[in-house]
Image (cartoon, rainbow, N blue to C red):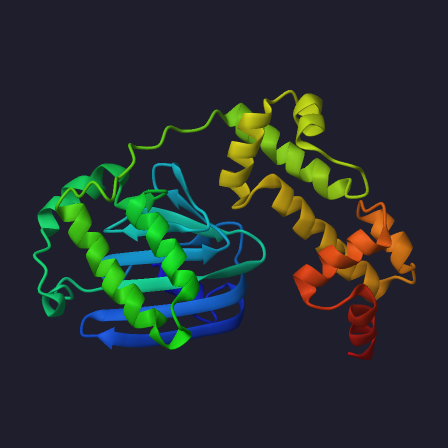
Length: 296
C-alpha cells in the first residue's frame, strides 16, 4: 500500500533519493529522502505484503480509513499496517524521509525470534489494522539512532528494528505501548483549523502569532496547535515559516521586487533575518537563489 507512494507514475509527484534494497529474506526496505506530493486523496492500493512498517524521519502522512477515521503520522513516529482498511493517502507539503519496511510472515525466522502473529493481529485489528506508535522508550531511542546510523547500514538496521517492533508488540513489552483507539475530532474544530491555515497563507506579510490566530478564530491555543499539527503534519510555526520562504522563493524568481521588499512581503522586519531563514531552507542566500533561478 505505502509502496505506491514511492514509485513513479502512480499519481504522486516524486523527486529526490529513493533506494530499494532487500537486506534479508522476506524483507524489502525503501530508504527515502525526497520531495513528495500526492493528490488530495490518493487511492490506497491493496498491499502485496502482510505487514508494513514506516519509520518517519521527516514530514508527515495522513491516512483515511474506510470508516472515515483519519490517522496522522508525524516526524519521529512509527506507522504499522497489518491488513489495514485504508481508503486514501495524503502527505504534508515538502520533504518526506524515512524507512519503509515490507515484511513477509516468515521474515522473523532469520532473527530466531518467537513472534506471535495471532497476538499482534488481535492488538492491531481494533484499529482497523493501522496503528501509529508515538513517544515511548523504544520509539525515542529508535528516532535518535536513525539520525546517526550510516547511510549504507540504514536499510539493514531498519529491517532488524521492524522485526523487533513486531516481537515487542507480540510480547506486550512495556517498552512499546499501542495507544487506545483515536477519538474523532469535532468537525467544527477541524474546519476552524482549515480556515486558520487559509488565512495564514493569504496573510504571510502580517505578524501572525498563535494567540492572535486563536483569538480571531475563537479556538483555544492548545486545540489550534494540536489539531493543526495533526492535519498538516508539523507545528504551526514551522508550517508558517515554510510557506513564507516558499513564497519568497517564488517572488525572487518571478518578481522584480528588491530583497528588502520581498522580506517585508513574507513577514520579516529585516532583510538579515529573512536571509538567515531563507538560507536555512534552500542552502543559498536570496541573492544567490535569484541569480540561479534567472539563469535557469
